[in-house]
Image (cartoon, rainbow, N blue to C red; front, side):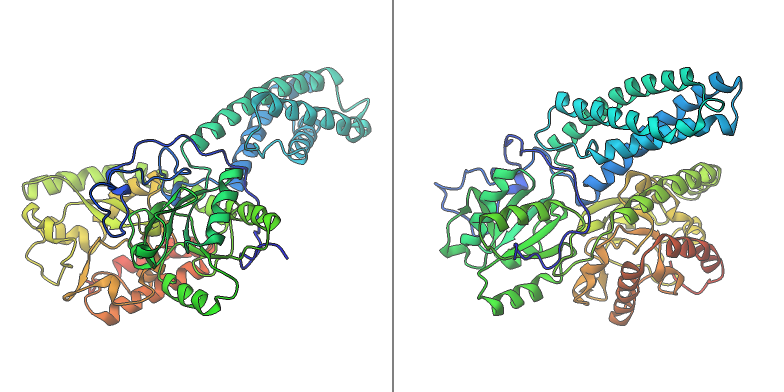
Length: 519
């Protein structure tokens, strides 16, 4: 049986690149572990697989997603050429004249997919990739000879189709050269390489690190172990960054795709304990059991693939993520364009009502606990903005301006968050982002519910399931925090395009029909 990662990968990902050269460490790369003696302190804590630039997990690209995008790009290019060539065969553009070109385009996309021309293997050079493209065209040409034979001689004019085929060859050659360059650049940026951290500084972890370094399919950013004072400072060159408690709050976690538990097979009690401790993380948690060199290679491949079923954490769906991102870009762009006149009026009203800037930016928690700057229209006096993050708004709050009360009651102060949506930091639908360090009474809200971090397993949204179910405004009691978190987790478990559309359709009636909620 191959390495156990709890569930086999459901979809495939493009191969990732070998790790780039190590840059100099930044200020926050220093471990959370106990300080080293002064003579040993200045050392590189990045490790041999750290990408040159860390990108948050929300911006990570996967093989399935890239393949889908590149297929769509190829299809658009072939479609444009078909529209240009079809009139040559019929004298004018007619639906019937497009039929052979559509068949040809489908044959080309199918043949390129069959020979894995959308895989962009890790060490595949441009020349080798273009040879694949040429082979795909050869396969498509043979298919077309059989598929289009029934159209001869009356329906298809051979000359326009041949012209289209040659033009398609040149166009797709150029496009795939562009795709190859883009993949190469994204790999250098670390956007195609899954980042993991390993729990357990032992032989299993060392073998996993060695296999990862050989394959280059994933980057191990660090190792965590409760025996910090009694173990080596690194595992296979990867630094030990602290104990399990340090992992839970480490600043590197928004950049980590998966947490891998690498412990001996017979340590079942320890595995259960670690799973319970790590269940509070929004990151996927996986279990690795070493069963030999072959299983290590299989494990690395599975770690590099997405989605993977975790021991804990929300299972991902690449198709749903791509559709949701397309939804955010299309609907968000339209909403921003249509809302610009209203936003201009609100900005003018804020300026006339009170001194200070029009916009207010606040640090809030995003996907995988990433700290993002969320945009809003300013609704409070500038001198009170510093307390807005931790002290929630109360009924008849003196900090809120006259215009602020109006735009908060109708949630118009949230309109600038369309900028966050288009940047990919937020989504139109999802759990509302809470301010960093937000308090409920005298307690930090995040510490009141064990599952609080689970709401960060998807991007925060401008509206959400909790909003249309009445959980809006401040969560100033532990009971309200628990209800908000429960509704957010329910959305994460049920999320779909259909549910998102229902939530967006119900948001405006909910906002306009509820004057009692303090916002």
